[in-house]
Length: 298
Image (spheres, one colour):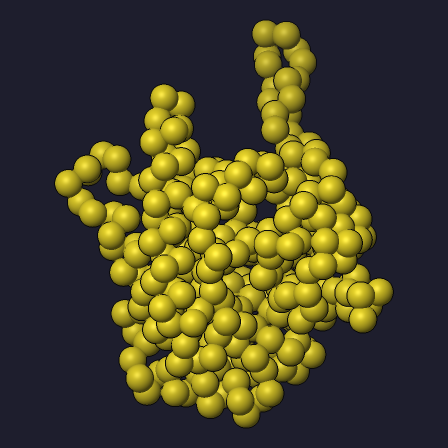
């Protein structure tokens, strides 16, 4: 398994410190990560900005610092755009994936990551499912033509529970469409992480890790002089300090034969804030935890 740092961690999207891609690659190398995943949108690897000169700079920087570019992380939502049916949202996203595949091939990346789609309406659930299946299959074909794997991350609503996610990938039914199965969704839903990981491991090319603490929320009801409970808020913490049973998850991955990329991301508000120093401390502590988790497999 290969420890990997995701550039979204230093993209400033949640108020954290911002690094450009070359500075991020240097940072990953200094922290001890042997591979990186690059966020495929601004302020990082945007298809609008990544001309040949920029691609060459990124490739040279990775080689200079002995860091593998493992994955390009695309951002898709194949169920979007129902309020403007005349706009070809799926076609535009497939074109986006095609460009990412071209860039990924030049950078030596093995994987382009995509999402499925957010829920739209209850009565549209079957149509949403079918739209995602067709789009994912088309993206898998596009990626295969350039020798790049398509990775589907269990993030968006369509196909989110583990068995449902496996069913979705089976419906896509393309050998170039791989799982990028993360533990945070099944953990939040109370699933058995060992069983989930063992089920998905044979289909996986990558997992992406983050850990969270639960924070209880309440709303005051003046007429009752009491409180009602609200859904918990979660806050990111270093790996091993939160609610996710990563040991069970990795036992399942090993039992299922997974030996791919293990990425770490700081992709939400983080305990301690978004300063560069706190990001570095958290990424370093989390790398140490990843090494402990993958050590039995080595």
